[in-house]
Each structure stands twice: as structure tokens, then as C-alpha cells.
Length: 398
Image (cartoon, rainbow, N blue to C red; front, top):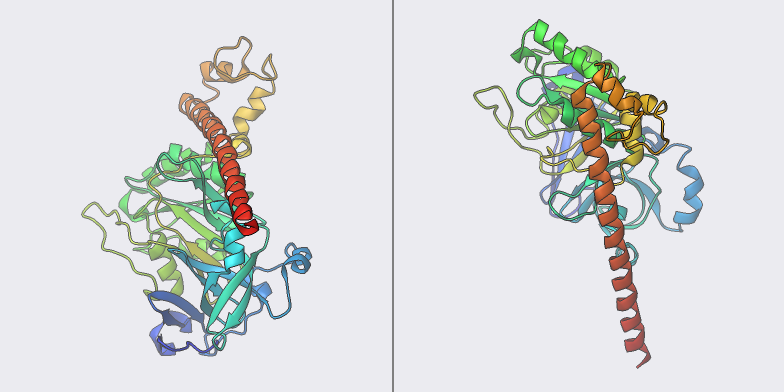
């Protein structure tokens, strides 16, 4: 690990303080937290970029981004415009180079958690400047909350998205459809995780699992952070060098799950309510490395999960409707009023759930509407950008 540098402190735990010797020291850069991984013997794990997920997919892009004096690292946290990056040795705070910031004219192109970047270190390798961002192999994104129509990046270069829902009040198949579409759009493998199984009966759990399996072929895992039931099958899905992202509403147990895997309260949580539901705690996206080499990204709960540019994801997430649509009389059937619609016929014969059909139409209309608004916004943004550049050019010539 590089030196923490002036103004930073390192709190190193005793190997006996954590279960199975999975020890993590916490470095604080101002208010930012970084996790150092130790082996069961107490030694710092020797990590390579490949251990952090840098594979042959990214290698062809090294030439176009790499320059003398620069290194490759991964974004491990983003907080109000500041970054933490991780390399083979550890984590340091970083900021965007002025030239890179000027070149980026789209907020979705800014580095996000999971991105690979080229950096230049300074101040004895305790700080860094980000000069370039590698193309993304996979991604998770949504429409920004509120009326603004733009992309908000959640995370990049994810292998598997754990779509987390509580078995209690949070369980919502329609919201699950949205998460499945998000994962499909970004080419990320989804796994549904049902938490807080201790709050319902075994029969109720089986009903919820059956409902989930009726809308997706994704793997379904059920667990309880409180009792530990189901934790072993969950841990068996984690593989060294692979990146997993936890997605779900506030209070469903995402951060508690990570703390359980770490073996200590590395990330802050809040007490559950009287109903057994958690409350919002996580305020930023951050990547942590487990002692077995798997990486987990914790994300804040999302109150809104709007869709933008998700046409392909909807087709993948609703494969059953797409298969039915192949038998419609018209190739451009909207599945609403046209005669000979195989999708509506399936609803009428109860082959297809009416709720699923209605949610499909809702999501399709939503993304089509937002797509048109986004294209109009981009045209205006580009026109304004050209105007600003022309004004600056005129001022230089005077």
C-alpha cells in the first residue's frame, strides 16, 4: 500500500478482530474510506490488475490511452466530484485532469465506480490525476431522478448484478422488472436476491420465489442477514477477480450483507424499524474487495428507476412477450389495438399475466418518450457547445 500521506490516518486492526482472519485496515483520506485486504495469515494480499478485473477485453485500448509516466487504475468510489482509485498496491484519492474534464460533454462519460482509467500519481504516490477513461465492457445506468432527461451511471464493468428485494414490504415484481431491464441493457448478468427471509414463513418464501421465476430465468437466492440462512449459497456464487453490484431500494440489507461478508462493520448501517425494515444509510457508490478476491459494489437505494435508452433491455427482459410477438399479424404491432395480436390473445387466454403485459407496455412507452426528449436535449447541448467554442475562438483572434 502506498503511504497514506500528510493529513491521513490509518487504523489497522488486529488479525484476531475478524472472523476467519479476514482482516481489513481502513485508511481515511479526509472523509473517504479505503479498504486494505489481508490474507488469513495477516499479510497484505499481493494484488495484480487482473485480480481487480482488468482482462483481455481492455488490453486493445491500452495503446490509445496509455502514455509515458501514467498508470492504470480502477475507480473504487465517487463522492461529490472526488474519486478514489485502486491499483495493485491500494487506494488513493484522485481528481480529473482539466483537459479531460473539458473534453467530456456528457455526464454519462464521466468516470463512475468500476471504470478503468489512466492516471498520473504525485505527492509520493498518495494522490493522482485521472487523464483517460477506458471503454466500458458492461454498465448499469438509469434515467436521472426528477424531470431532467439524462443518463446517470450507476457502475461500470460489472459481471453480475445482485437485484436485492426484501421479502417483507419491499417485495415488488414490477420494480424487479425495471432492474432486470437495466441489467439486460448493460449486458450484465442478473441474480435476484431475496433478503430478510426471517420475517416471513417458509410457504410465503416459496410463493415469492415462484413469482420471481415466473418473470425471469435468472438465478434466485434467498437469505437472512440476521439468522445467516442462505449465506453459504450466496458466498458460493462469488468468484475471485469478478465484480458484483448490489442494486435495490433503501433498507433491504445491501450494506449489512457486505459487512457480513467482510466479517466486520466496515460500512455504516442504521437500526431497523419496528417492522423489521432497514433505513437508508449508503450515500455513495463504492467498491470493496473481499478477502477471497471477489469485488462488491454497494449503491445507495434508488427511489426512482426511470428508463432511458432501454429498448434492447426491455426486449431481453420480456423475452416471453417478444416470443409471442413473433406470431402477431403485423411486424410493427404495438400490442394494443391491432387485429391479430398474439400478445393480447395470450393475455385473454391467461397464458400471459395481465399485470406483466401492462408493465411491458408502460416501460416501453416510458423509454420511448424519454428517448425522444433525450435526443432533443442532446441537439440543444451540442448547438450550445458549438456556440461557446466559436465565441472563445473569436476572443482569441482579437
